[in-house]
Amino acid sequence: MSTGLIFAFTGVLLFVMGISGVLLLTHLLRRILAFNLMGSGVFLILVGLAQRYDIPDAVPQAMVLTGIVVAVAATALALTLTRHYFTLTGRCDLAETEDG
Amino acid sequence: MKKLLVLIAGLSFAAILGTAMFALESTPVDLRLEVSANLPLSGVDHEVTAVLLNYRGYDTLLEIAVLLLALLGILAVMPFDRTIAPPADGPVLPILARPAIPLMVIVALYLLWAGAFKPGGAFQAGAVLGAAGVLAHLTGLVPGWHRPRLWLRSGLAAGFAVFLCVATATLGHGAFLEYPRPLAGALILLIEATLTLSLGFCLSGLFLLLSKGEGDKS
Amino acid sequence: MTLEHYFDIVLALALLWSAWQSLITPKLDRAVILFISFGLLLTLAWARLDAPDIALAEAAIGAGLTGVLLLDALGALGASKHSRKRQ
Image 1 (cartoon, rainbow over the protein chains, first blue to last red):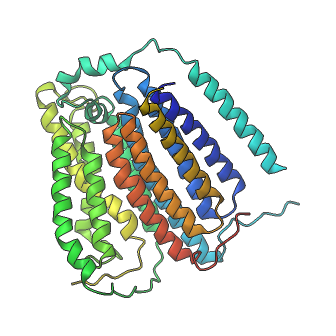
Image 2: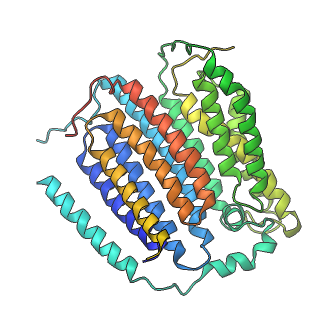
Image 3: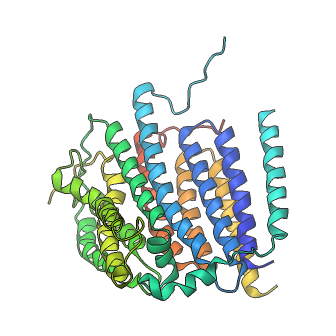
């Protein structure tokens, strides 16, 4: 039960929490928070599994560095769209579509 | 009902993935040996920087492109009716921020230089510059970017443009993004320097383009 | 299990607890603040995983910039005035 495996399993649980949040929560800001939790979970899995050797593996660490910057860009765009949606409709959750 | 389904699916997914992780064996391809064996040829002395800017330079190029695309998306959706925020009350915050910002620029330049042989590099330096920009705006020293002018737009695009120019220039000598061996260190430093500047602008722009404040303009 | 493993387990539990509370709490500004503290705990986790580059980037971008963006959006949505229920 090494350090890497502890944090990799924490990453798995964070990912599951994040995706349950995206599916079950209704407020858009909370869904963005849950989406970021999913991303952080995946990063923990990548770097945690890179610790299997005695010297840490550099390739997953570079990928996670790229991932953090892309995640903040995606969060900023998602927040802009949420704010624009709020000024257009006045709601903070997506409207339910009626079928039929 | 939906909650129960999601809960069961999530927990079973976690159980399966956890079991697979604990039973993982070492891979047949060990990339660490390749990374450290080719490190003297890559132009830098730190493995993560070498992977980011030399071995997987294409990923970094596309990452900057994605960041610029997100910025374009924000520029497209930006609301034009903005209220002017009241200026910061009291002089304490700007007085504390004024010496902090040049210090942050020095820290960013150090991180950029140290990235060649210690942990550091363009992304960390760009992040510190972005934080300096956000700090300057929040304490009222820099106004929000309502209509970016030419110098700001060229600063935003400079990192990606220089990286793309270097990448296509190497097309004539070999493959796309294959640096010539004696020039690798210098090219990486050039790309990292413009990347730092561009990242600082982009990351503070993600916040400053949306902000409603006018700053103190003092 | 050595002392370092105890520290790792406590850190992992703190990460999971702050993430869980950030999703569950009915007040939205409390959720954003818990998310910022989750980012700072994640910086400690990167330091424990021998990844100093990622720790530097996460401290500046993940905790700092994302937190500021979320707080700004919170003010724009006016959500801090009336706290919304989770469902």
